Image (cartoon, rainbow over all chains, first blue to last red; front, top):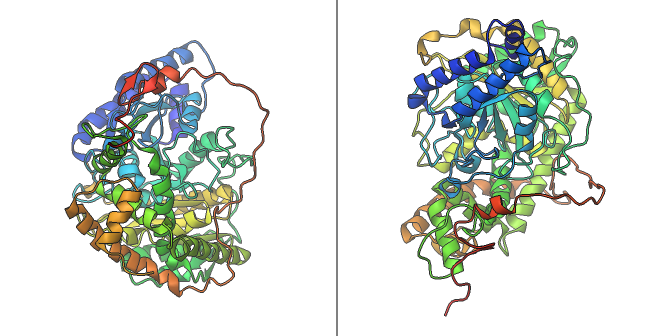
Amino acid sequence: MAIAEWREQLKRGEVSARELVDEQLDRINQIDPTMHAFLDVTGDRARADADRIDEARSAGQTLPPLAGVPIAIKDNLCTKGITTTCSSRMLEDFVPPYESTVTERLWNSGAILIGKTNLDEFAMGSSTETSAFGATFNPWDLSRVPGGSSGGSAAAVASGECLAALGSDTGGSIRQPASFCGVVGLKPTYGRVSRWGLIAFASSLDQVGPFTNSVADSAEILQVIAGADPKDSTCLNAAVPDYSASLFDSVKGLRVGLIKECFDHEGLASEVKESVLAAAVQLESLGAEITEVSCPRFNDGIATYYVIAPSEASANLARYDGVKYGYRSEGAENLASMTARSRAEGFGSEVQRRILIGTYALSAGYVDAFYKKAQQVRTLIRGDFENAYKKVDVLLTPTSPTTAFKAGDHVDDPLSMYLSDLLTIPANLAGLPAISLPCGFDEKGLPIGLQLIGNVLDEKRLLSVAHQFEQVADVKAIHPKGHFIP
Amino acid sequence: MSQINSEDVRKVAQLARLDLPEEAVEKYTSQLEKILGYVAQLEKVDTEGIQPTTRAVEVVNVAREDNTLKTDERESLLALAPQREGDFFRVPKILSD
């Protein structure tokens, strides 16, 4: 159900907020024991919030835009009084004393917290298998991964456990799971959305964004969470346009660039390539002009990212010392050994691996060869995009080189897992907004996602192109229902 | 970019305050070798004279009025401590014998 449709139903009194919440909780009870999208279901709070909304409606009060919309929140966003674990033993018992800005804005707009969703530990991973509390599975095929790191949020929206969810995206952690689960995932421009209360991973890359069933719903959520925040000085002080009002802005004459290096990549599955190229033809039928552009350094994105992100992570995660909050190892003789043991026991292996890579890349004698070099290549990748946007308005690529892979496929080979983020990482390195939306299915019936990358702060255009593509493509109509979780 | 060996990993683990068992050091060494081997492709990119990017989207200094805000979080923050003593965080002894 679309958020706009829900708003009408609530307004007309056809369905109460309490009925919707109860229905969602039933759905969660039915499917989550096998799919495991949620780490915590906040049923009591959700029912109480829904009752308050129903009372406000009965009393004739004007309801806020997201009144009664059940939303799931990735468990790396702090929710006051509700355990926020980052899917890590390190934060297993962490109850934040404050609320993140994005969630506060959602609750102020009437949205209801339905639960906290699973992720790869500290958002490091592409399959939601590195969670310390067990993996999440893909609702289209429970033997497969939902993608990651925001796999819980993607699976929850895809399977109808909530109307929308929030995730975070450092190298593709919203878009890749959205693609694997057949939903819409938006990573806004770096700084478009406040990160106050988002547990930091890589600060020059992290951004919060929505998972929804439709592009129009993404526009509604972005509307609420975007905009300057006095608590986050990296949040841009730029006006927030009316995203919903511009969804039908004409795409006639819009210049869409296909990034040559993506489509030529040997790792790209042929079914994915064909589906995305067919989507380009559909965009053409809407009046868009399709051209090919070159971003020569695009395929250096992963190497660049796997220096910069772990370096920043190693600094950000230095705060977990077993002193002020988080896990502490018992029985250590002194402070230094207590900290070193707490970190060895509290962090899982993917997190430790990235801390080691980052510490190595930043250590004396290596910082120029690794960190500075990666930052320079990052400049070249940004330059490629700047040149491309002189010729085109938006860029089109597949979101992921493949559809959802089998659980366990990459767990013993971290590098092969990293390579699955090939197509999403460059937008993070350049700070650009990008959206993933369904464009078809492979022959196994698994969803394929396309990615549109916009220029800085061009979410408005990105959403309008995506919305109109969604209308003509009508991907849900070709949905091979047989495979989907019942 | 030279090859990483288990001695490097032990040293880095110490810098990163990770008390790793020997089998973990061995496992991470072979994985890091592979990952850093992949990252080494950056060496081939000509970056002569290229400015490093620290932030993709330029941010400006944000100034605000220097107002005092009262927060009432002392108790809730202290309550998160693995071990506390009154209004202090308790830790094992700091200096070794």
